[in-house]
Structure formats: structure tokens, C-alpha cells
Image (cartoon, rainbow, N blue to C red; front, side, top):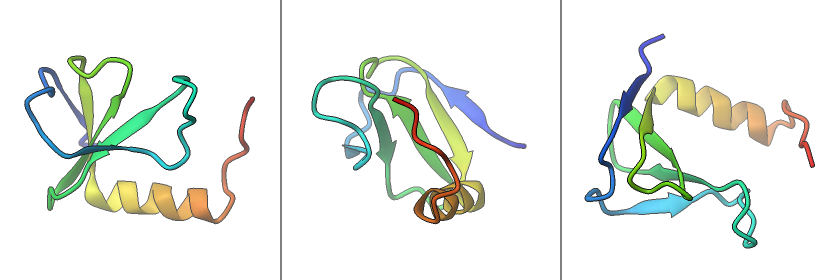
Length: 75
């Protein structure tokens, strides 16, 4: 796998919170759209922390599996 981690992601604009994140400040995932080769992903509670750079095809497969119910929700 060719995932990468980057730090200092705060200056990048356009982060959006996952629609699966709750409004209570719990586990929140943010993604940054508009990159052709990868999808930057970070923890919204740590905007200056590292971001994972996930290859676009892998991200698309992950989203398809989530939409198909391939992962059980843990509460």
C-alpha cells in the first residue's frame, strides 16, 4: 500500500466533516476533496495533526464497502 502521512495540514482549506460524524464532538473524520491521486483524511479534533493520504482507488473501494453495509457500527 502506498499510504502516506503528512503533518501541518491546517493551511489547506476545504476540509469537510464526514456525514457519519456526530455533532457531539466525538469521533470525527474530515476529508479534503479535489486531489486527483489521493484523499487526505484527518481527525477533526487535531486539525494541526497528521493526515493520512489514501490512494484514490482505495478510498473509493472503502466508501463503496461502507455504503454496502460492509462494516458494523460500534457504539
